[in-house]
Length: 313
Image 1 (spheres, helix red, strand yellow):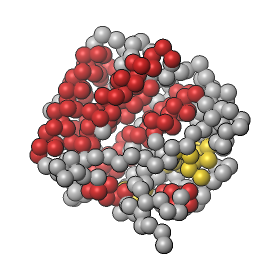
Image 2 (cartoon, one colour):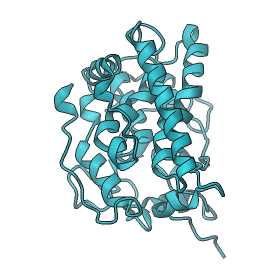
Image 3 (cartoon, one colour):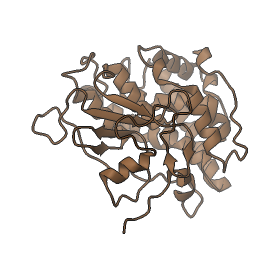
Image 4 (cartoon, helix red, strand yellow):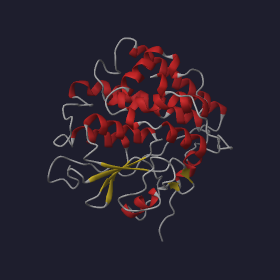
């Protein structure tokens, strides 16, 4: 007998500690793609597929790297519906830019997980890097996927010269990631999904201390690790672009807007204007997913029309 899948629709209820704090579960598929021809998952054009949500900041990282490296014609992409149902991410196509599953023709992302691992009982998340040749999931950890995209497909990329994780900056990038992830990337979720006042306030205080730290860094340089765009920026930007439209209100992170941080707002605008980045952002998916899916936070499911964050960039 197979173990029932945990539905992603209840992620924000399942991953709560006894103190009422949101604790994100670890991802499970940790395979790698390699440029080495002897590797199980060898880097090849048109072999790999990404399943993403245009609402999800973790999936957004992978789209940004594909755009920056010029991998759009090598790695196909399918987009789930922005509503996170009780059965998890669906491939319904009744929302603009939702593509359906054009590889396996499934109705739900959980079916792809089950096909790859029949006894899988973890959380169903995006992004998913899928090997079309072997018909299985390679990896569902965004931080690892973006490093593969950065290096392993250079033989086919339009922009192999772009290196988001250069050797001379790796220690600095790793150090930035080490505090930005828990305090900002996951900090907004820890604030919004907290089920006690104490857990919420601890998350919010840590979040804004970290945002203040980012603002101070960016007052003296263009990007987080100096004058060149790196992986650290790719990991921060998806949270910032969603902040004023969603996290500020929906997740109760309303001490300040990103628009009230001059250096950070300039930084966000400069990344938004890089070639291909604007096309990775869909504010309709972002707003609809959060406000319509999280009924424990927004019981009416009413989706606000604003603010128009992109118009100010």
